[in-house]
Image (cartoon, rainbow, N blue to C red; front, side):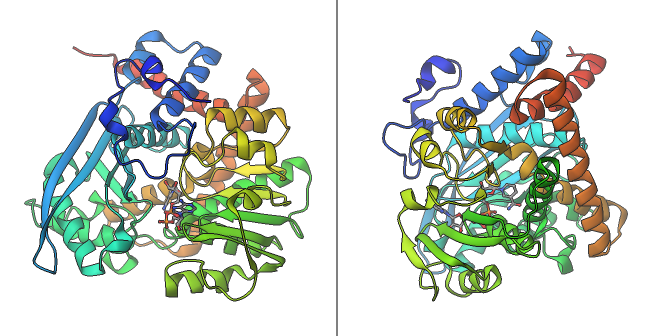
Length: 443
Ligand code: NAD
């Protein structure tokens, strides 16, 4: 299906906003914000949202695009394009990741920022939603140059971020190194140098990060899969798994769930897709990625095509890489019981329709990958109170929160006879609507 984004979003569609989008697949929806807008419309219809609230949340509050020059270690100066979209802050400071990827574009950041708003509202944590990024491929730059780019971007953002205003975190292409540099740079441009650690979450533990943050998103994904299996009365031991993307989220999902006896049959990343009928050792696979930067060259298993990967016969499919990976074409070939959206927006509208028609379950992104922002909130709280929590405490709190959210979503599905994604949206929107109605839209 070719979606006419111009028709669906007359106020927002900028032809140049798709410029540089990575690897658009021929004939596919390529504008992520139109997917997010259609999901929102569906929920608004299902719950009769107050029209004034619907209007207020239909667009992000702020969209910032920055071009900033960086002198690289070679001495050459390059110009980079950075984004920060602040979607909504009625429940608390804007919150969301920073992505380093050559395909970052404005409407992608808008969609990802909106999803952060629904995620934090669904999880009932006092944050709004934001997302940002820099359009470049970090694999093409040394660690030193990535530091230069991160620091210059942070400097250019200036006080557009802040510990009670807008709090970045890691996303695709960024990790605790980048967050440490962001925090350090920000602390050097404001007066309160010691009190602003919490301007960024996902930092390394010595610099003020939370224990358990690195694996939090994957752990949350696994808790959702456990809930899904419990409610279906299925035994996870012996189930099989395929994971697209073996970075932070994909690798932690695969290793953590392997402790429940789930077998990793197939994995893929930007270099290709790999299959092992005996099952991969996810820990060794993760070490290989850490050492070499990708899955390529891992001894054991055979290379398969992208089509074969999505058609892998398995119980659980976890897309944990880019958005818009599963359209009708892939959805028709899926051979699994459940698709767990570890990535943001991995399925387009047609893909989702086909998956539902085929009776395959979907655990939607705003729930499935919300463990990351939940533990980011715990990090922010620890920084605010000058505390450090033990890993077991963080883990227990996260698991309890994920389980509670999952139960609330299922209850909403049953009450309104809606799918899980729509139920997530409705719970988030109810929360936001209550606060908008009490605070008012003023002046
Ligand atoms: P990451 O950079 O650590 O890993 C990304 C993975 O995707 C890598 O294995 C990479 O090789 C793979 N990939 C990139 N392009 C690909 C392509 N064209 N085909 C197949 N694989 C490809 O990123 P991450 O932090 O694990 O994020 C992955 C997804 O999870 C993103 O959608 C992100 O928004 C989402 N997410 C991340 C977090 C977090 O805490 N890091 C939280 C919530 C959601």
